[in-house]
Image (cartoon, rainbow, N blue to C red):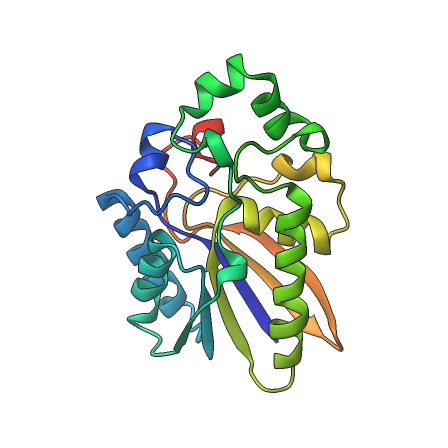
Length: 214
């Protein structure tokens, strides 16, 4: 079974360089455009999804709905693939916080030293809910479907890729995931392998910096 996992389109927080996390922020016009181009890219490649799983946050749901305009797949909201909660840091300028707050700097340079604030999650907690979703929902689909799509978020996707590639936590942010980036994995005999990363169905015109990683 083929598993495509993609990040949502650009949001207003993405465009302003703000830490997003659990905040429910809508797509910009550019974000809508990226989702539409990705929708068309899937269609032009003849890629058909039997099911689409999406994070319940509006930026992911809207992206998934746009993709589904040419799919007509079953669309399923799944809370375990929502974005990582960054606690008190949400809504703050990412550049400023990373430059002035040591803990936030650790988050994006040495994640193993990061300590969440407020109601924020640890990296381990995000890995745990991601693994639970794959073990209880995705693995049992093998043999039932040919191709599914998961629409979610930058940090969540990195938990998936680093986990299945057996990477270290401190390599977390070495994986680049621009908005509407697509990754392909395959599920065979109960094992998931990463086939291809960072597939874009549009020409990237904005440089991906630390402002755009969440």
